[in-house]
Amino acid sequence: METEQTLRRRIKTVGDLHAIVRTMKALAAVSARQYEAVLKSLDDYTQTVEMGLQVALRGKVFDKPDRPRAIARLAAIIFGSDVGLCGRFNEDLVNFSLDSMSGLGVSPSARTVLAVGGRIQTRLSELDHPVQDSCFTPGSATAITATVRLLLSKIDAWQDRGFERVLLFYNQSGSPTQLHLLPVDPRSFGNLSQAPWPSHLLPSYSLDTESLLAALIRQHLFICLFRACSASLASEHQMRLRTTQAAEKNIQEKLDELAAEFRMRRQDAIDAELLDIGAGFEAVNSD
Image (cartoon, rainbow, N blue to C red; front, side, top):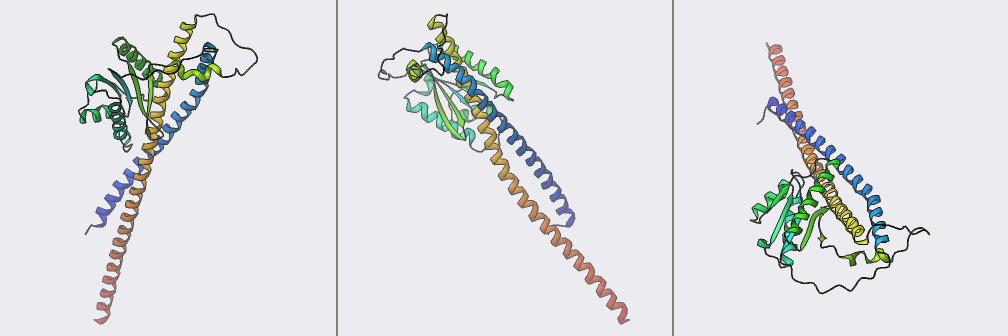
């Protein structure tokens, strides 16, 4: 049976742990809102790029899609996390990514994978899947741009090496998501070429159409990577918030249990002392 002193020490330890988890929960909530705000602010930039594509593609008619051909070499970027306490965030994403790549008929030896986050790299290594490159996840919203620029440089290198397709895997609202990043099919912008312009005055441009399209499509790739990174980070902190909420609830229940046990032990000690006093009083009066 535990003594009162032992219970006091346990209550203090669990109370300290409770305070740590509450702090982690608050940080996760703040971080999740921060990256959600980044995603909302990205909408305006996305609209600007799409309007540029709308002007550059206006009046163009695209052919019907060709029959898809087999892929010889495939590159993939997988956004994960560097730290834990986010449930099956990394495990489910890795399983989804590997299943998706296997469904395309590309063997692991013909794939190159860039893992964003140490946990993703570790998980892929545990499954004996080669990881050719890796980088850390951005530590703040302001660091996302540098990470995206690094990824764009990696994609340029992959294209120089003859990789035919680049896929993007990330978590969005807690669910694994796949995005076909390259090659960019102009037919995917077909709706933009036919969409009405929001004003009566249609903009003009002096650049060569191919140069303008190349610049706009690169901005489109930047937006896709930036959105995926922001969505992954927001999802990670949302998962961590849920995990810390569950942990806080369990710790609070344990704290209540220890407090109730301490009160019971304390009451038993007080009752024993009162009985001793009563017995002593009766012994003195009997004499």
